Length: 120
Image 1 (cartoon, rainbow, N blue to C red):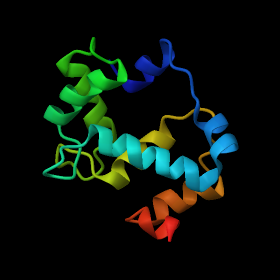
Image 2: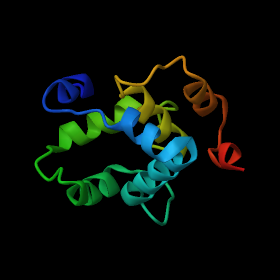
Image 3: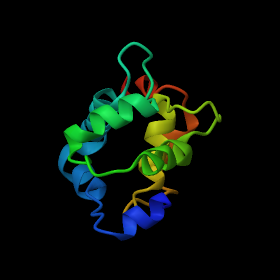
C-alpha cells in the first residue's frame, strides 16, 4: 500500500491550518517535536524499529510492518533505510496536499541540510 493510498483513506491535512495558527517558526518546531517522538534516541534517526514502537503513541497501532516499511521507503532519499530529520521534513511537506510545494517555506526546507539554519 503506497502512502498516497493511506492518504486517500481518512487523511486530513492539518498543516495549512497549523501554519496559519502557529506561524512558520511554530510549525517547524511542531515538526521537530514529531521527528523526536518517532526517532531512535541513540541514532537520532527514524528507524523501522523506532517507527513501529513510537507510532503507537500517535494512534497508529494497526499499521502492518509492510506499511511501516513503505513509509520509510517513501521518505528515504539516500537509500540507507532510515529517515534523517531533513528527509522527515521533506516527506511531511510532500505528503501535505494543502501546502503549495512551490511556496517559499517549502523551498527553505529543501534548500537546507539542517532545519536549525531556518530557526537561527
